Image (tube, rainbow, N blue to C red):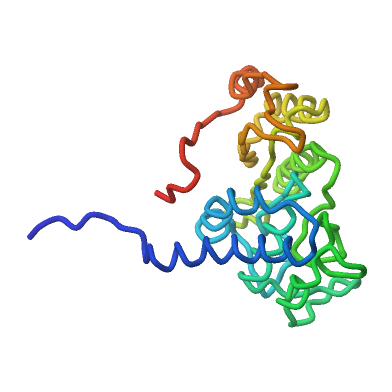
Length: 245
């Protein structure tokens, strides 16, 4: 018998899933005549893989205390998050944190992206749309908050966990970009995370070399990977975000 090489479950389905995320994002931005389609389209494969194979959460119980946290620090790319909430079927929660059973983000919500009173505002807002872990907008704020979430997980584990009965061990994942890395708050948060050796925290840095004004090289030339090595982080470089393997 020949050994069977491990393959992904269904590459056609994966391609369709990734392209659906992209299509929702660009169509919503086009309909609103406002927004940022680039990052949601570029990071769709990363979001797909993260939400389907890594992130531990329950769509039917978005307030499960031990869920993994996902933070979109680049809040202007909000359609990436809204697309994932819609496609994964995350349920809505009322202000009393009672699960309502209806979708957090419907297709109609996406069609009203960036419109008054929409569940899909231009930047994600905590407690306005279920499944959003924190409000993000000012760049760097989200990744700083993610450090606090990782610290909270460690504290909860030390206080509540017992041998053979682990209540808390959730991880925090944050997606960030060049704008986040330019902000001083990201330096401080990254330094603290490295000092505390937070092994339950992962930042995914989209180094796309472009800003709204043009090439990032006009104003930013840091070797970000080397900086994080200096902070004590475990740094992995990904050459092609479209390669799901």
